[in-house]
Amino acid sequence: MTQDPKPPSQSTALIKALTGTPVGRERLQEVITAYEPILSEIAKLRELDLTEVHPAIIFEPTAVYRSAE
Amino acid sequence: MNSTPIEWASLKELGKGLAKGHFSSAELTQHLLNRVGRHDGAIQSFIHISEHALEQARASDQRRRLRNATLGPLDGIPVALKDNYLTADMPTTAGTTAIGVAFPMEDSACAQRLRAAGCILLGKTRTHEFAWGTISPPVSNPWDIERIPGGSSGGSAVSVAAGFAPLAMGSDTGGSVRIPASFCGTVGLKPTFGRISRVGIVPHSWSLDHPGPLTRTVEDAAIAMNVLAGYDPRDPACQDQAVPDYTASIDRSIRGLRIGVIDNHFMDRNTSDVQAAINASIDALQGSGARIVHFRVPLLAYGLAAIYAIELASSGAYHDRHVTTGVSRGYQKDVRDLVEMGRLISAVDYLKAEQVRTLLCEEFRRIFEQVDVVVTPTEPITAWKKGRETVTIAGENESVLAASWRLTYPFNLTGLPAISVPCGYDKEGMPIGLQIAGRPFDEGTLFRCASAVERLLNLKHRPVLA
Image (cartoon, rainbow over all chains, first blue to last red):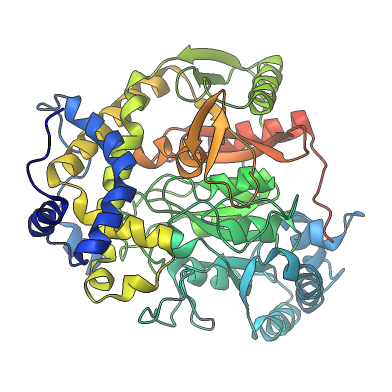
């Protein structure tokens, strides 16, 4: 495993910038720690080649007209 | 009216009793309020009791007397609503005490439908904060108050299991109706996505949230669905589909019914007590003429990743204003962590989760070309002692959240209807649930199969309250 070249404070600053999270750096570190086991699960999605699959959520331009009835 | 004590009577029995004048709605409501007053201190299922319930019940009695007719099978019957359903005459908190969170005093679509059917809104039941968890503190399981009731609709399941209300509404984003139903020994239905309007329910995850009823019998769930199901143009997900009479074929024989069993994911990591109860239920169904077909769905290995990505991103978006303004600092730690990590989900991971969801829907469509329903355990475990963060199942450690929704979330991802019906008890007397899932908008077949399970197993135990 390669070593992270940035100290933790710089890493959290980068994550803050990338995600736009408003939480403070110290709190962000706590959130990241809580997220780690979930991330290892979500990372499984990255193994899949889903190029030809349409996402389940489908844009429906007529929806707003229906709700205005 | 038979000899069933009124607090344990079914909706059907209560409806008959009211119609024949054996008791009034005011007497029934007062009886249940007294019971809540005596026993709910120890189990904490209600967060708010309506100060208008008796007044509503008296008005209901008067209306029935004057018209000499009822509004239908729920007329005059007290029901409870999870505290994430907006109500015009009771406050809504969605289980949070965070300062800066407020909800309007107006009726949700379900509250409107229940009131129009003549129901008495008894009170609001406790939920895990923002329906984001499976513990529902401080609610206790009425079968053993040292144990959790499940969640997030824990208060609703407990109110039904404890004989406080014959019907309570819950909401189910990853299993939140079926999990507490299984742990508390009640029936819990998550209908097809779009079958019941979500208008006026505090959102958790827009494409996963399903309203659903908790009852003590399968027939009661069908009776409730006759009132709750239907199109609502205000809900963009609600489908304009005909509403059948869900009670019509509930007693039909299951001879020839084709039942699917998915051997991986659902049947390979359960406690021995759960597995034994599920196997016995499947044997009983087979013994009544159902045909069992086995499947494997390897794609389920990606289900947890998909629901985490969708649910975290969605709840992150819903709570973003509260995170930005610091209001989320007042949330409970577990829920605060979950909503604040929403920003960490990348858009690509989110969309890949939605792509996996398409594949899962296709996989289940292929299964439902060959069978009428799929049966699984609702939960791999029974209710655990409060304070536990992990459980050991078949020698493997798992977080309680991951374990408790493992068998239920596939039907939130696919939007398919799924019901939990009691099917036995573990060695310590805690209830076990059987989950039955079906084709979109085919709740009728679920009721038929679940009702057969109820008849075949004929479980009669009830929790004993202190």
